[in-house]
Structures are given as C-alpha cells and as structure tokens.
Image (cartoon, rainbow, N blue to C red; front, side, top):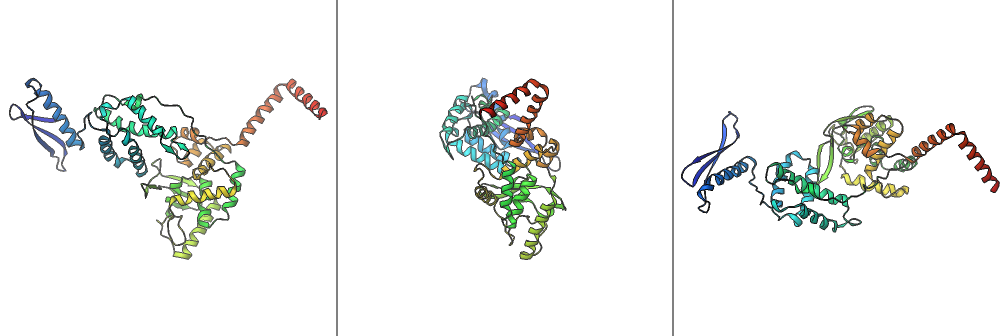
Length: 398
C-alpha cells in the first residue's frame, strides 16, 4: 500500500513499504513526483494514483512495466524473477526459445500482441530450417508455450487484460510414434554390450535393468549404493548452456531402486578397476568414471550407444531414452503392477506412465489376438467347422 503526501498543488511524495527489517521495522522507500502541467487539474488525482502503483511495482518487484513495455524487455525481467525457481536445464530452455522469438515479436508492446500477431509468429517459425527439413509442429508449439508463460505473468500482474496466446488457433499434429525394441532386439544389444569396456558395459546394463534416466545414471555416486541390491536415486546431471550442472531429480524426490545381483557385481567390478588405477574412490565420487577418475560428458554415453545400435543392425530411431521405454514396457507386459512400475521409474502416479510408456510388444499383441481366437473357437462351433472345411479345401487345391 502506497502512502501519498501532497506537498503542493502538483508535487506529491509517494512512500512505499517494501517489507520488514530483521528487527520488525518497516523498510520504507519514497519518491517525490511532479505532475506535468499538461495534465488538467481534474485528472491530477488519477495521475498520482497511477504513478503510485507504478512506483510500488518498481520498489517491490524491481519492474515498472506497463502494457506499452516491449515483449523482450518484459520477458527478460520475467526470466530474472523465475531463475531461482527453475532448474538450470528448464531456465536454459526458456532462454533459448525466447532468443528465437525475439526477432519476430521482441519489439512489439505487450498491448499490441494480438492472437493474430502470434499466429503470424508461428507461421514464420514453421519456415525455419530443422534437422530434417522445416521445424516440426510440436517444436513450434513449444515456442508458443514459452511466449504464453511470459504473457500469463503479465496478465497475472494486471498489465494486460488477457493472454493472447490462449486464443491462437493451433494446428493439429500427430504425436511422433515412439519406437520400442522387441525382446529379441534387446537380447542382441545386450550381447554386444558384453564386449564393451566395463565402464560402458555397467552403464548400459544398469540403464536397461532399471530404466534410470541418462542424467540420473551420470549423477550416481558410490554412496548411493546402500546395499547389495539397492541404490538411491538422488540427483541428475545434465548439460545446460554448455555447462555441466547437477540438480535434484525430475520429480524432485529421491527414490529407492532395487537392482539385480548380477548388476551389483558388475558395479563392484567397475569399482575394483578404479581402486587398482587410482586408489579407493571417494564415497561422493560419481560411479561412472574412467580408470583415472575422469567423469565422461553425458553426451559420450549417448553417442557410443548409437554406434552400438548401428553395429547390431537396430533402428536408427533408437536412442538412450529408448532403454527406459523398453524397461517400462517390459515390466508392464510381464505383469508388474502399474504402481510398482511408476515408483521404480520415479513417477508421482500411474497416469503419466500409462500415457507415455505403455507400448505393447508385438508378441503381446499376437497373444491378445490368440485369446480372441480361442474365444471364437469355444463359443461358435459353426465357425470352427467352417474353418476346418476351408482348410481341407485349401489342402486339396494345393
């Protein structure tokens, strides 16, 4: 709440409370303003009230935006305010997306960002070159979502009356189909992995048998192994803006994962190699380091696995996160409850698991078809007789 003191007909002192000191006293800031002579007497009060609101925002939040503030200016201030609350990778993603849309809408005042303006922005983004031609529609939607987050903040602060991004007509696009290896393909990959150095053999085998994310695997430390067949997932290591950063897990929670005894023995063999080369590793040393204690870049594991896929003759669409999809799919197919699978994968509930990781294997689909065939055979004797007769005629014709 701002306090306004009239000093003369057109001069006012505006005082704002900006929180409290440690001793409980109010932290006050004041500014004296002079109402321009161009403002008529009848409008002086409205002018002063508007200035008081602007000064209050400036002192409290460090910003003094209005609907005439350019989008880029507001977005940069928004990023600064959000940085303490975002993970490093999330912050880097927003910053990257905004850098791409600034040339298109950065100089436009917030009040003039109409739905039509944002639709034109999307059309321009669709013309950008991508990896395989033009930018995918899902990527364009991510840019729009970033812009929407900024505009939603401006709406929340009563700078604009509505979020124009919510009124943009979006193009429908089919979600890219996730390619999941069949069981025989995974067996082929695992045989190939056995010929890898122990660092990569243990990393990829643990990824297959636990479904851990790449960043979670890279951030594992020796102290995270709490038993012969148990480890705790506490952190994630990733690359953001060219720097390696560590943060908590994607769900912001620790979780306990049970591992097969063979995997624990493989990890102990990796530890023994590290002991022979560099001495006993510190408890807080990452598990996946080379014999000299050097921690590989997360991308190293991704690139090497792609070469292994190629060596096995597997699909080029497979990547490191494919192992996580296979793990979830295999658990569900073999009868593991959704609650257990969600807990092992680090999901808060089963809804996301069902939407994202339920990829029936071809064998399971054939089993479902066989069940329906059995039902037909048992419930419709005429159908069975018809099929037998048809098979006899086919054999005679042959």
